[in-house]
Image (cartoon, rainbow, N blue to C red; front, side, top):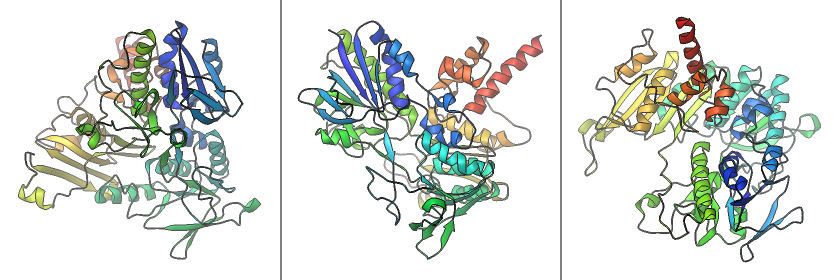
Length: 521
């Protein structure tokens, strides 16, 4: 009997799940329906800011083609909302009046932008009404608003000091806009980066033409612009920051309202077990930004320390791939719901990378400790743990900073600003749990004029695209097979289809290949 699978949401994670389920659809094992609120099929939401400053096109962001999916037998419903989930009858009530049934339902509803409670904004996060001149930069229409401001050389105010806000600010400034970043903290990325790295980061932003207003608490908006649009951001000290466009970059919140409405358990996200099943509901699953892996077993140590949805596309894609395999096995009868399976591998701590022309930053792991902390100086450590050690180097004048936190030589945390080669190597070592060289200065020299290296610095097996988990070897093989552009490599390997931070590395591998061919010729 054909399994009816319905996917609610049509973002990047849902697109990956659908791609992986297509073999089951073509073979008749599964009947697949996808319901998306937007009129467009899935596109790369992470790169909406790049579209807004004119560095890419809407077609380049596309991750799915509705017509091709329909040709493969997928029932695609675009511009349609799910009004209600009837769990008892296993049916959805849709805004177009239809009510498709399901055997397996997958929530891939993602997240929504956090709208701060400011005078002049609708504080209802479920239905924000943004005035003219204010955007949360979440979809293609928001990108068009930013594009108009940037192309006109307007004043852009970015509220929020997170990665996406900083990337938007840097790109808009480089394309000719006057940009101010406003954040409530001593430095940008206050929740992720240490004090030294944050100070160098703020100075680097200013050197790139981005004004930075730190320790600034916003309280409201002025609407004196054309057509009653945004004209200034008001601060609690009575001052105001004038602008023509306000970009809200205050974080995101998982979309759980549908799950809550049908009685599923939620915390930060929809609570699911290690098979991505909703608690006490074997027919419903959740993946991506809306899913929180926290199984109901109290003795599970891994779930006891879980931190909720990561907000990153890479973990969502890995969930989608695992779930597609599981649903296909269920549909074929190869496994039952009670069977024990290899669980979804736990995600490693995420790496935060700031991708911008002229600036490089990477942060990961535990970075709060300082070299002068008592545990570091006196050698104190928690029971059964090795001594914490910290190596730190700063050159604020030239916008460079590196910090390495290790135990028993293994990297537990890193900060790198303005040191791209060092950052790449540290990230590789962090993700592998590998030991650092005894002489830490070797890593710093990777960005020196002599570009010194040590064993392992040019490992071809290193992960180039962390979002899709693609190695340099796989990319090199694709190039050797005829791929000559980043787009062609992305089509063959999926590398570069996430945050886009690896595009320069992919270009480097392509150039290296053709330089080698030219030398042989």
